[in-house]
Length: 411
Ligand SMILES: NC(=O)c1ccc[n+]([C@@H]2O[C@H](COP(=O)([O-])OP(=O)(O)OC[C@H]3O[C@@H](n4cnc5c(N)ncnc54)[C@H](O)[C@@H]3O)[C@@H](O)[C@H]2O)c1
Figure 1 (cartoon, rainbow, N blue to C red):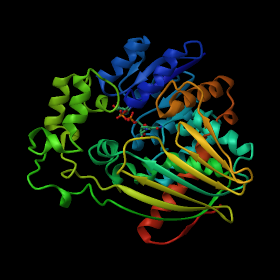
Figure 2 (cartoon, rainbow, N blue to C red; figure 1 turned 90 degrees about the horizontal axis):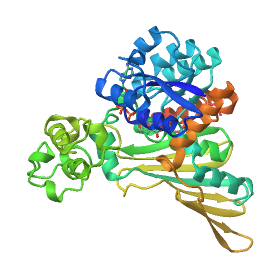
Figure 3 (tube, protein in one colour; figure 1 turned 90 degrees about the vertical axis):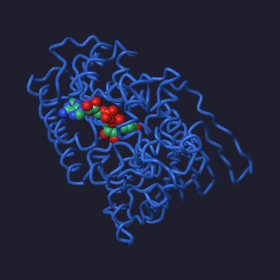
């Protein structure tokens, strides 16, 4: 049984804590740290955390000495570094939300600190832990594609998800959370590197914030959706998204981020004066709404990654082109076309999906808790050191986009 300190009782902390509630013989939440009393107490109440183990922040938890075997760091991106260093030094096993930190230097500092402390440490690259990824891996290992020559990968962010997180929300500004590629696509870069199985050697990239900026604001649109005459016909309406959820009695992501508890009255109040009620063309966002990255792995394997806001919200889509066949995956299954036989076979994901991110939220917790119980850092596939390598692809691609050049990586 692994005891857990939850650092951050927001959306992600609550999700990971819930795994412990559903797996009581593997893990138990024994402490929680969050300055927002309403979130801290909500999580504390669900898990029966005594009042003396409910802390106003990670510093207060660290000052109490080591209160659990492991800690889950689910604060915002810029608030991973300090708790990671302090808690690694105290010997906690650490599950750190992605990205490690907004800058490369901070990521290096975290990876080195975990290595130095010798603790079990994992980064929540949830895509790696899905039954779908295991299926793709199995097919590749069985030779379905032969040798991989090229991979084409699409991250269809979804128009309302872009508006929620990257226009109105926490990841809208590069100076606060780093570039879009790091915030959203560090998963995809990690996943591509994992599938190809060779180090990335060079990247180039193009992308921009094209549409969700003030000059595209329709004539007559108000600053806030609740005041806007155009709102009923607007795809980006905050009123439809958030009040709609609240009125249906839904209390999970994304409305839980807007107000807690997300009753219609609380959500309406938040839309009147909070960030999530703003017109998408009247925000202070600066991260891209579409970007493409060309990657080279080893001497000659190539890949492309496209992220775009302008999609229906859905799972990532990937085509893997190999010497013997072509794979097309969409998160729910994989079609394999075999060159020799000319036949296509369909391979659905057969496992029951028990959590968001295609089951990856549960998958990463299960792997992390097992590694923490065994005290073996080698049991974690997404260590900070390995994550650093794929985060470096994001930083390099962002340099390539800004400077209009190809950036070589150490490989
Ligand atoms: N792995 C994934 O797929 C995935 C998905 C979404 C978000 N994330 C990452 O998860 C992290 C958390 O995101 P979120 O959506 O849960 O954010 P959130 O804002 O819902 O939660 C963050 C919580 O941290 C708390 N906090 C602030 N300062 C603190 C302190 N000093 N000590 C303890 N807690 C403190 C806040 O009060 C808040 O409740 C981010 O790094 C984000 O990028 C990962």
